Length: 522
Image (cartoon, rainbow, N blue to C red; front, side, top):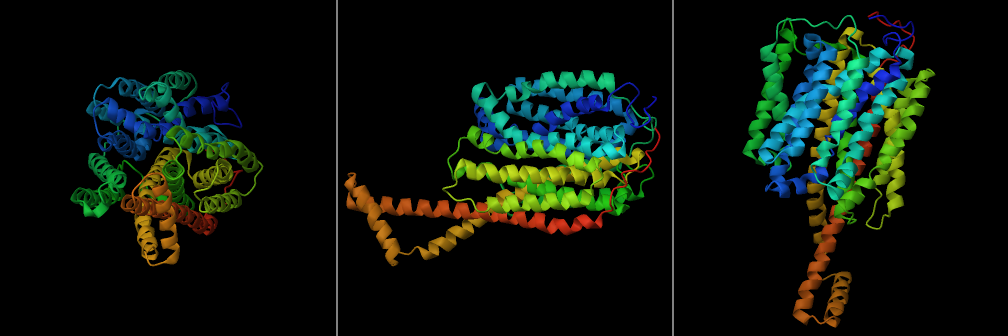
């Protein structure tokens, strides 16, 4: 396929058309990691299941997605990238329809596995296509476009899911994928082509590597998703799965380093810039997804927001990213040092999370709006430069493998962040509750005065003195629990802010991108 002189896009095709083609389905795939969350109670009620059983709708998708992500580069080389992309989009769209019509929970879980497996290919392929389609000096803009989908989709997911479920049905959370999936399929067929070094070939399949990867990643994802629910290592189920994940992944790494035709090329981590970037992306996923879980819970549990309102008021993060990602892409195209922009973004995002840690029970909507807008701006200056710097030293023929691992670690970091946030909030709430209870004994004058005031108010409304005293104690204890919960959320936001601060010095381990380097011929 001939190419233009200043772009790797095929002759006669605008590279931005290719960008839209690969981003449509990828946006939906990332959206589906969070859009179902607020619909779980409705799914459980509709399919005669408990909410705990319905959570397998999320877990099954994430497990299948995580298993397929790291082998996408190998699959593209084995089947051909365009053929794999068309198959993945078709599978994802069809699985979305099947999820929408699923009559029972087991069938819905099965269809979600198909959806997650099909969607696992979409993120790394779209990123690889964009990085190869645009010349190096334009990659910042391309990654800004790609980043808007990857960062904004999980933020918009709860809002869209809540709106569709509230106004229509939880089934429309899946039906909404159909028209966009079909549009992506048509555009992919017309405008995406394999470069010359991507050829369908029948090299040997590393069956052992594939099996160990599926077992290790699958077990790890279930541990992360179900750990807090089952009290972590107090559960024999979690302990066994944790040991399986550890053994499976260790054996997988050894196998891939020794195999003649490995399914995942781990030697790419020998590059200092790439390995540092993947580590930073893992931490970025950890903080982003962890805070995405913590804030809606804070709004609903402590400020009494409805699920839909909580979703709407967590969307300013997406707005901040939408505004500032193109600006970041322009700055990168003008050869600003991407590492400096990345460090700036980390500091801004850390400051926003520190502002989160100042929330109180009296925080109004605008107190919540501005820190999120600032965080969205910070994430724009983190995500785009980080992706650009990390992928800069990777040769084009390794791009599919490198983007697969890059996206896998972001997703695993996100799962770790969600598990960490829910566990930290639960444990710190217990800690603060015990600490506050130690100061609330009946001999303190302030406590006696508060109890007397509440008891007097209850008596004046018709309660007897003994009943009023019991009710006053219950109200006071409820207030204690509320304050303990508030402090636990404050702790989680503070920890996430510190993680971003600690990430900043690592930026300078990476080499500055060579924006003017020659592009490998296709």
